[in-house]
Image (cartoon, rainbow, N blue to C red; front, side, top):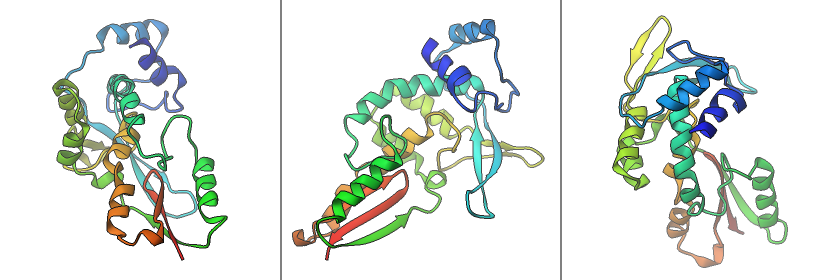
Length: 221
């Protein structure tokens, strides 16, 4: 619990970003009190929606910022789930994983095309975070009933936007939550195997390299 609170309130770049409760920049005493009060509960607060610009475009993308308390709980649950899923994830998945970066994905693509000419299909899943099916994700998690109920509470908590009010969240996982990248990777896990099943011809040697929701599909020419 101490490690989860430290991650959120001291190490994370968004440590001074407040949720709907306006809480940020905790003192050492407040951090200790938060550690004592952390309990896996189904009740959760809605996330606060903020809009940030997309690099290289005029568009903006929404971030859902949970409260500090919920972020600490998410960090705690992530510590429990991540080791199991890291052992299960496909080897060619690189985004939002410990010890991996975009440079590793670039290297994997280079090694796949440097010796044999191949066709490359570049794909980006539209609004991936926003359209994740809650029921399918919760079923796929296969975790304890308590953790499953807590995660369901985060997914269904709703989004509050200043001046517009509270909106329900019937699908998707909010970008901005500590556990959201892990949940997205879990939702997309198995994509490479699905592609291999669709490509019946073994001579094509299909290979899929994924960085979060960005996909490179490589097949032999």
